Length: 274
Image (cartoon, rainbow, N blue to C red; front, side, top):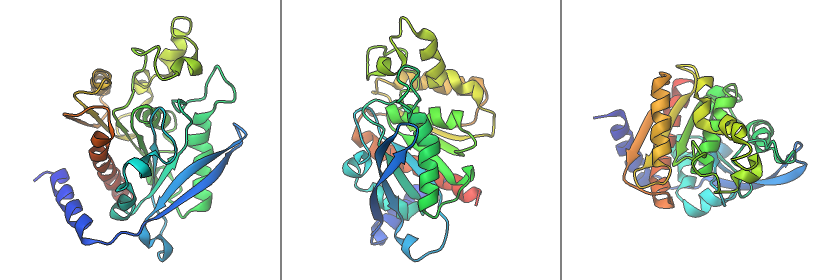
């Protein structure tokens, strides 16, 4: 029996055997770099109230058009996973189409700075967290999958484990989509900016044994080809990673399945590094 098969069986038993009461906070954080308030959902395990432990944190990044409440609204079971894996889940708002980088076009658009620095500092200051990279993970879907890879590659001192679900890990084949041109300028006139900020071109930042990585994409997804290319580039650079491919499209039913594998993977990382 594989390690994941065993964990899925355990998870299924645990899921039906325990009464859930995870705490969900909707909080308002402040971004000094963008000079504005940003809403965030924080999900704490039930035991957080009575225990004195410090907890690992997984940051969950929404996709284009989403918001801070996307995960809890679309995947109500996400609240249970804080209990199952004994982690804190943090779901920040990233506007409609931030792509989680600091825009070279709009100096007030600094979602890389906010998510990887300001938000992490706020969470560590307000909750009992493991305040080291060994206690932090980041994952997301679609735009958020790109964001999780982008932020973790550029900030390996902040995150120790990262994942992507149906991530836009190379957005250059889609120059007219999802307001990317608003953040980087039109592709035809700003190709270097697009090259510099697309995740597939950032693999050289990684070292074998650095970040723990898990990537997941469905075979009917419009990002399937770029995820295959991303997987191959990681292989070319000899970067260890888990790559999950199965039937499915770019939708919530797929991510409802994928998030369990992502959190299992991250939980194993946290437990190895406690």
